[in-house]
Amino acid sequence: MQSKQSIHGSWGSRWIFILAATGSAVGLGNIWKFPYITGENGGGAFVLVYLFCIMLVGIPIMMGEILVGRRARQSPINAVRETAAEAGLNRNWSLIGWLGVLAGYIIFSFYSVVAGWVLDYIAAMGTGQLVNIGSNEAGERFNSLLANPVQMLIWHTLFVLMVVGVVAGGVNKGLERATKIMMPALFVLLVVLLGYSVNSGGFQQGWDFLFGFNVEALTWDAVLVALGHAFFTLSLGMGAIMAYGSYMGKKDSIGATVLTIGVLDTLVALVAGLAIFPVVFANQMDPGAGPGLMFVTLPVAFGQMPGGQVFGFLFFLLVGVAAWTSAISLLEPATAWVVERFGLKRPVAALVLGAIIWLMGIASLLSFNYWAEIKLFGMGIFDLLDFTTASIMLPLSGLMIAFFSGWKLQQKITRDELALKSDLVYSAWLLVIRFVAPVAVLVIFIAKLYEKLA
Image 1 (cartoon, rainbow, N blue to C red):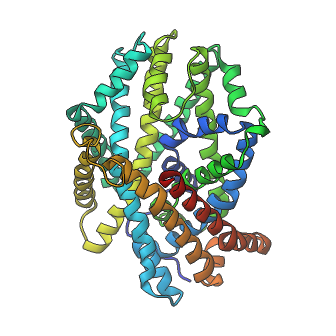
Image 2 (cartoon, one colour):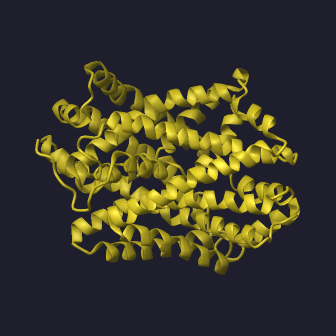
Image 3 (tube, one colour):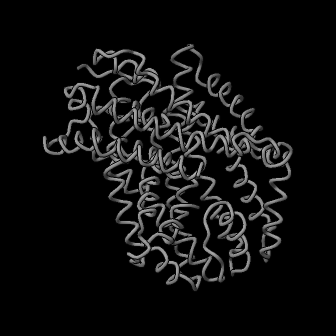
């Protein structure tokens, strides 16, 4: 088959794609969730199970997403439609693309609100507002931020503009240029913070928390946690990886590239844990997960340590970069489709979509204050959007990608696009994408629903 060209451009090299996809995968979850769930669920034993889940769920589905994107060289919606047409299938399979793009778009609407909190804390750390802050003060500061819609709106607006500015520049002048700057910066910040944590006085405790081989803590629930995180951490099912795959070089190996992304994503999460938890333990604080760790525990810990203001600032800068690279990949699929469908110039498409996202985000930020009493199925707007995307849309999208690439596409298409050197490796991918990955995603889907509705 003659190789197609994307109207949006292509990555300058395989490594640019790897860094861009890693940037998409590395987000807030890597920093405030993964290290904690690792320590709580068996440390080194959990890491091994998690890597096994990555190989059986994350890697195969990611390969399926990329092969569809690269085959058609279009946005996820049109990529699935065109690939289905090539395989003699109904073009309504484009529903997979629609589901993914819509999920990513909705996620961006509330993700930008959380990213806005990060921007606020970058400014607060940089100006010394958090030096010597106590636990009660830190909690009150975070709560006052949530209660202040104007302040949140300012940061939400700034973050949306930051993302729109990059996506408007296109693949080469926007996404690629930003990737070349932000990903090396992220790695440098991680190394600097790791060096700081080594000398914090709590490094051994942090290391034991993350890597102590505690098999007893590795329960069935822990395996479900590993399975779920293996799926969600790689930005699967939201159109991002398929869109990025459409800009990938034809000669680049999908298998080797995806393996590298999986390793880098896991490595960043573990190093982030080694940068965070020694600081927490050095101050005899609780190594919890989520917003409490990020916006209450860590400001107190950094605020009480020598050089804490500088390194606290660098930490929140790291988190901000991670949030920025992830959000770019959430807006890109929708922007690419609008350009293809309506023929708009990319800056116009990005600005229009950004404006809609901005409006949707206002509803999410108001759910923490003025609209806090508005509930649907017992959830506020922010939580409802999070639940709908993470527990329903993304697992369904991943399940459909596995079924489409494993069962519906002819093997001559998947063989040609994956171009795996060994028939044994291809057969193994086919076996996993057809049988193992769908069952695993179904388990994730059922577990997520049960967790929320039980």
